[in-house]
Image 1: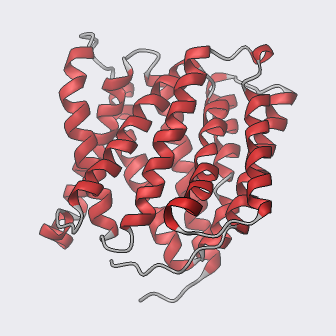
Image 2 (image 1 turned 180 degrees about the horizontal axis):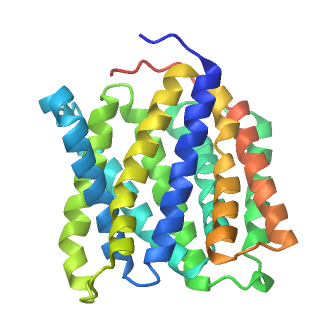
Image 3 (image 1 turned 60 degrees about the vertical axis):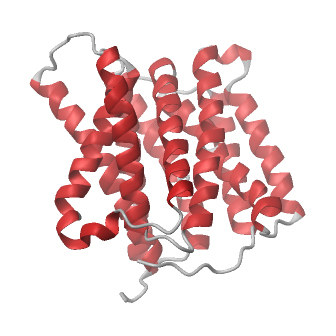
Length: 293
């Protein structure tokens, strides 16, 4: 087992978050020319091919061995649903606002983990959750000019993402990390691989667009891998607040690529969501879980 080095864990975690922000920004760009299912299919199929090429020779059949296959597939379906909904939201809204709304998911997870998983949450956790919802209201207020369908999809994605994260907490005690990642990529590839042809417009991607399509699998696969490795070097309590750096990456990339700049109230809402989510994560208490790798 590798020696824990917290600073390395924080660095890997931050890099993984940057890759996720790059993936969201690329998805937004591509959905300006292609339907969302086509773009999401490219993400999952690229991720699956990357895992098969790099991890297949090392892990072999262990990639598909699970003790609770049904729950593992349901977990993957939750993420596939969230990916589609976030893709629609990104097509209609700026990257930063979409990312900020999606960060309600960790708060819902911590609150739901109390009654569902027996995890302890203090009064500060509940207060922080309410404040976080207030931050989202600032972001999606009527005067913000955000697309109503995009907001609805982003909020629905929060629920799907929360289900994915809750099932991750349940399954991590019995399933290998790489198997969970592989089933996620496999399930998404099958679903969107079957759906995508019905949404293909016939447009032939340019070399630049083809490179962007190929990058989606790299961003997603490498991002998940870096974050998984980060937890081997640093405790979750240290990495939880760092998670909200993705808001910074999303804001910067949205400004650089699309010229989107959130107004002051939206920025305040994003700061509130980030602060409340970090507070919930730090105040939550949960028993240690053994991981099988």
